[in-house]
Length: 263
Image 1 (spheres, one colour):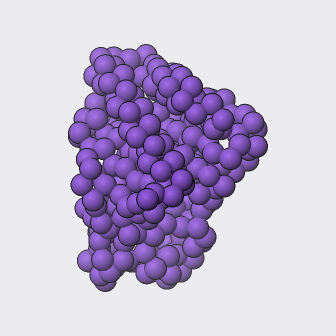
Image 2: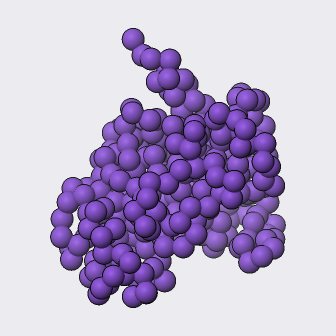
């Protein structure tokens, strides 16, 4: 018999999957259809009418289903009310908005639930790839319902790591920058999902990182047998008063080697 916690986690995961599918339908309706675009203040990047529509629908669907849960979303003005709740939704309506605007398929819906700082249910959905990554705490990770596994240990010299160019700056590394092969995807959520799937050995972002970009992916990676920490090796906690963490390093078997190589 399932414990109540596991049963609750499965019910919440089903809710997130349905919400992600609805989000995908909305976003695909605007995709390559010249949606309205605005630039956010403080150099926070672009937002489109698709991001805002998805956010409104997710807020309506998820908060009506779980009215006691707090809410943290990139496209909703933050409120301290979430800090007094036991559970919280952590949402990026469209992660990879620049890719979305440019017509790339590599954008994602990132939807997670946290409890006491720990992510317990998570979905990353890439509708243009027909890829639904899912995880619930203690229950493994899957892609379209099929279990996935992060890659095993190997020398960094033959590893492939998803990272933007600025992370290769020597200032971040204790010695020479490891000679891993670098690849890139614009969505942080997608990078994490690809690590969990075992298509890449690891990913890293070495700057202050918004929780909504990485919350869902952090659980999916760990449930796929990988490891996740910030750039100093600390396991991240979520639903912080200021919702940022100190970067993220996520990987399968090379994780400890990557972390050890950093400053």
